[in-house]
Image (cartoon, rainbow, N blue to C red):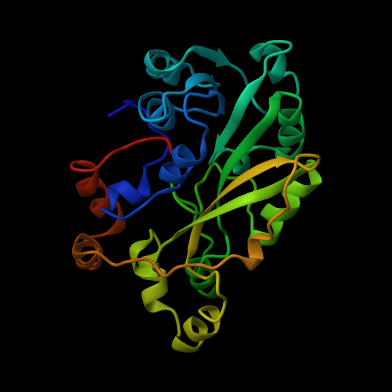
Length: 281
């Protein structure tokens, strides 16, 4: 366990599910590259960037309690508030990176587009921006709205610390408005029964479920994007043109579904934390 004070659970690992957003992020970074990781938290991704991808990481994080956990895996740790327009000065004038990672960070910021624009000045020629964002259009959110209960929780799609929400078109526009273009798209898909709002979906009217599931992106839980400046070679991808693969349901996921029906969500999460991986991402 990386931190005694995580702010979020790694939902995919906690629930015995498949490839997570973190897996895609680590897979997209340049091997051995110099990486700027924004909002690194207690280092769940930082550790993987260093150990699995051989990257040299400069980690930017605000919380005092997380900084000691970042030190063993980082070339440098910078304490800064990403909502402060002066955060780049803490990283250093003229600092350049092969990739900048903002994994499940932008939804917590007041002006995420401003941060992305700033990133363009901190990339090496040929550098890339890697972003992961939760998808507010997942089918379970429709079930929550139908129940008139936009219920914030400690983690997940409606994390209580989220102040921005993104559909896929909003993600595309966010990247484009900041002077970047999307060149790679990875979806993390989850069946509604395997999310934190499984109970809402189970109790939703059948006609609502049928209508919502007509959306080809109804199962997209998170979206991971790789973007480059618009002046870089190559064509831009339209997120809405990309195919979504239906997630594989494992035996562990079926067991988790049964447990969720028997236990309350709070008790279920407590039991899973005893055996699962707890992290910020």
